[in-house]
Image (cartoon, rainbow, N blue to C red; front, top):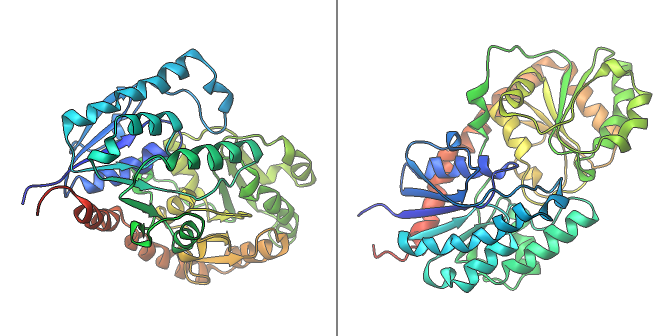
Length: 381
């Protein structure tokens, strides 16, 4: 039997979606003929030689942290360039996979070109609702979710059973259409690692600075931790507004912090995770799966994570990390102190993290994804 022809659609090149798409596409390319249709800004270096890149969209210059950039001629041209999606007909794939949130103009051109009526479309729904503030929630939850309903998906992938159950509860979907495929471990960043030693008593808070990430909870926990561990180092790395957190930070010794308030380049991502003793994710809410968690696993780092959403499906309390109640600085501090103080426990967790990373390998993700493709493919067996 000949290999399936699979198209991934990658409409923009910012944030974590290009990396996620590259990981899936590269792994699937071992088992199928893979093409990625995307924007002119797609970094080809992310993809293996087995993946064909077809750049048919103009570069879209905005992100969820800079929504105002959508109002520009360049962005308008980029959004209108999604009409080029009709090029899919000349490729004639067996399966189409959309691995990013479905932008409304892309949904519109998929719909008017009836592409979802001709070809089976798989959609990875990374989260059911926005974890962010009001305006981002309005855009992500209501606008994106509204346009999703225009497209007839053969399969919808969620990353957790928790999200699958919630999605079936809020949408009139056939349960057979919704399947769980875990988020793979982000091995991508390991290509940038160097001989950098772990730094003792160093914790990492990584990712976009958004309210739901619980940075305020971590900052409230720091004075508790430093009473026990005065040499604590807290690395805060990510793009976003730190101004609301300034009063809490000023209460702490400034030497405690190392701040990288920027979109963190790939090579710096690797060094920050290598240097850290453990990674902290004190989220207040969670829909989907945390990419930060999967980067931590790739580098073999134990985690302290809020027990929200489906995070407990990836973190086994006491085995590869510690689960704590959300919004509880004392519980968070106690868990961090426990892991920093107990080297034996930490070493056991590091070994378990490596096993978990193997379970969540992209090859395992690809095999599950290929089973799904074969189920819905229009090609005769």
